[in-house]
Length: 443
Ligand SMILES: Cc1cc2nc3c(=O)[nH]c(=O)nc-3n(C[C@H](O)[C@H](O)[C@H](O)COP(=O)(O)OP(=O)(O)OC[C@H]3O[C@@H](n4cnc5c(N)ncnc54)[C@H](O)[C@@H]3O)c2cc1C
Image (cartoon, rainbow, N blue to C red; front, side):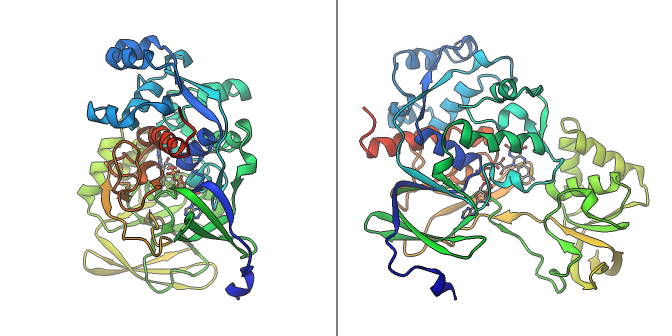
């Protein structure tokens, strides 16, 4: 069947660069390669905080993509940090003039972006009301400050407040059109294989609606698939029953009273809290022990209102919210509208009667599409917020894989990057500069 969907003799479509993944990492590189280049703009805040960098950049009137990144690294400045400081000289937003970057139109490079979802990546699928961990302006891409978006769309945001998923995804969705890149982005397309080719990379994708396979070649490739390519499974009987889901969106999707939430990280904390506040009877099943969970709650309750709320709920000891620490789900059974979750709770068997089960146990980066290359060296990264992923070993000046030339991991798939947008966005510019230099497009 799959064979029939592939047009066997169709010549692969060639592009100079292929970008896999349309989240904040892939989207950012797309716009820069698509012809929006950064230049240094004097900012009083940046200059007061980083006078030596400001003096260095003042001597560089051209595109910052042409900076000598290896030389910068030798002086102890990593490109990701340089662009983060230019973009966010202060963690607090005070005004657009604090940003030490100006983006000007330039000749576009031929690229194509392929992604399963529309622009914005995993933000398309997180719960409808989810608030970020970070202030809104930490989630923005440097060429399109949230404040500029707010002004253009007449939406009054507090840039220093957490931003809700609904607003954030609208912001990301606007970017392709706002920057003239829509024709270079194909969504609903999943990359299933990446192989070596005389031209560089041979990429096979599958159209998600029709199953049609398509082939592409490129000289360079950005792999920006994020940390949730494959959602983890419990691997217990009954996990695929109709009342069990790993896609929590909002409480209205859960008619009935009793919900078991299985997890223990940010996403399950959000779901458990929101379902409780919507009046549900919540059984929160976690593998971790109480102390481990409370470390996260205590670290977060002062800065994040939804953690303050979770702390209040647990401390209230309301019988409508039960925490089952040290628990393992053994089996789920039942019919179409509900059933039972069999749990081993601190070594004792428990049965929970439920209308719904929400499983939120995170996801993993999928490196399996790479076939026929030397093995990728991966390092594990964890952060204080319980995010984790495997990152690719890279060269520090251009974020190119040390194992596969012309392959660039997008955003925090590169070794050492923090697992949030503000910490990884700056890699975009060294990657774009490296590609443009290789293509002879930078003087
Ligand atoms: C619940 C939650 C809350 C978070 N809160 C914050 C926060 O407050 N602040 C913050 O900075 N970060 C937060 N993050 C981290 C988040 O990962 C980043 O904000 C950001 O989305 C990462 O961008 P990305 O482009 O690397 O990956 P993603 O946003 O994951 O985008 C990758 C895209 O690639 C697609 N893709 C994957 N595999 C393939 C394939 N084989 N073929 C084609 N397309 C593919 C994916 O479907 C997705 O659309 C949060 C993450 C989660 C899960």
